[in-house]
Image 1 (cartoon, chains in turn yellow, purple):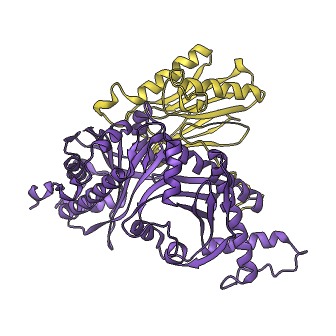
Image 2 (image 1 turned 120 degrees about the horizontal axis):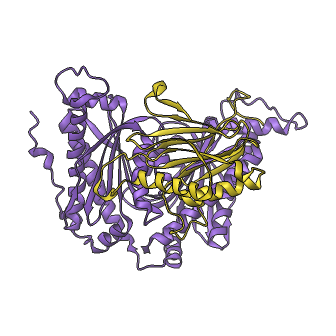
Image 3 (image 1 turned 45 degrees about the horizontal axis):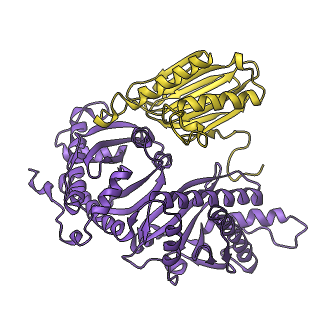
Amino acid sequence: MKTYGTEPGAPTPVQVGISELVVSDGDDTLKSYGLGSCLAIALYDPNSEIGGLAHVMLPDGDAADNSDRKPGKYADTAIRALLRRMVEQGANYTAVEAKIAGGSDMFEFESFGDGVGQRNIAAAKTELEKLGVPLEGEDVGGEHGRTVEFTPGTGTLTVKTADGDNGVTEL
Amino acid sequence: MKLDVNALGTFYRMAREGAGIAAGRLTHMLDVETKVGVTKLNFMRGEEIRREFEDSTDKVGVRVKLTGGIEGYSVVVFERENALRIVETLLAEAGPDADVDTDVSDLDGFDEMTESAATEVGHIMNSGFIDGWADVLETVIDVSTPEFVEGKTAEPFFGDIDEAPVEDDLALLFQSRIETVGTEVGFNHYLFPKRESMSKLLERLRTSEGIEYDKLDGFDRMAERGAEEVAKTATTLTGIDTSVDIRRLNFVSLEAIPEQVADEKLVGVAFEFDGMPSGYLLFLFDEESAHEIVDAMVPMEIDEEGFGEMGTSAIKELGNIMASGFLDGWANVLDTTIDHSTPEFIHDIGAAAVDPVIIQLGENQDYAFVFDTVVVADGREFDCEVYAIPDESDLERALNNLDVDRIEEAPTTAEFQEVDNT
């Protein structure tokens, strides 16, 4: 493929925007920028090296009427859609593991109630439990933003905060 | 002319669809990966469009006139250098068989051949957008032969288009950006629809009572004064001479709002406001600007890590007074009270400060009107982005209650003058 100005061989990470989900395999990198109260949900099958990343915004898709069109917007429907697409590509349901990051509560606004971040975390955990997918790692909550990078092949979810090199966690 | 969220939502989908098709065709043509950047429905006044356009880079454009389902002009605008690079790639791919001089890198300008290649690319892009719109609207749109335009200012591009708004007119403008992945080659696309054609479409797509366009226009005029007020407040409090650089009213999907924020660590002050309308207000500074502000507002040297207590409270104070300046204007024109919360300070990745707000609004709406303002200072670091995002149903009700005649009379409370700034 011909590109202008970029070094060959360095694959560009696939950006997973808000409400999006992407399934991929091997050494591909999936990336979500600047999560505040949004939650990144990474699922992967360590054997087939198939995995996916969702960047969800709200907890409950079953209660929303547009979750068919936008499953990636909600924690519950995103997890199911990721699983389904991974299995379609050859992943083994029973081997799939999960990692999550994000769900901060950045502001204490009255209108935010119990915290929009917390609700996303709780919804994701409930759905994973319901589907029997073990949660292998998490970096959630707090009051700070996160950028995540996920490699399906290794199942590594790298979480960066705004603190530069000090703020890197590998899950 | 009346509009509602459903009609604007359809326009937004239409813009995304068109941008997607155009990006796909660019990928096909150049054999490079492309992506659709920001897609927006902007409500902008003529002078704002011109100001945004005139960033002193050389540009080339390809424009076509539309008739049928949508009437108006569709214009693709490349930075001149980018257009030359694209043409270079295309002609190089035409390869040794083609009897052309493929080395255009040392070309000073467009000759007949490169101009026609650029026109072709532009036309294919325009057609991509138009095909997308026609699909979403399920209608037929006729396209004129493309016209090649070159220049630095908005004049040669939009000057002779009747549909382009004159200085003070609020026009609905469709704007998209398409970029090749990992490179700086991209272009902007503008659609200037004819007012009558737009009005007819809105009428067809509208599913609710909707908002009178004149009221939106009136409210935007008031927001313009709110923005001026913010700049004045900043000048008074910091002594840095600031002015409003860009100001527009966007209609975007909620997800697109954080994407618009710079992908770096920013300093911000956030508020929730409550009344008719309620919503959220954010002021975001880059780190350098924030330091400059603290230096200007805090007389002693601060020897703390980051912004420390003094710096944080200075920025919160500035934000608080700017918020009052911004919202008092709204409240006065709407003849109501709008209360705002105490300021919340953040120093974090920009998008992370915006996503809690869109999550909260996302419970009940998919799109938002965003009052988007950039305040800058001449010759000094002061970049402040202001996002005011009202709750959609509140905004609709507030606008319907708006008495347009009040706008010129209502004062924007200059509360900052009462602040002891010695």
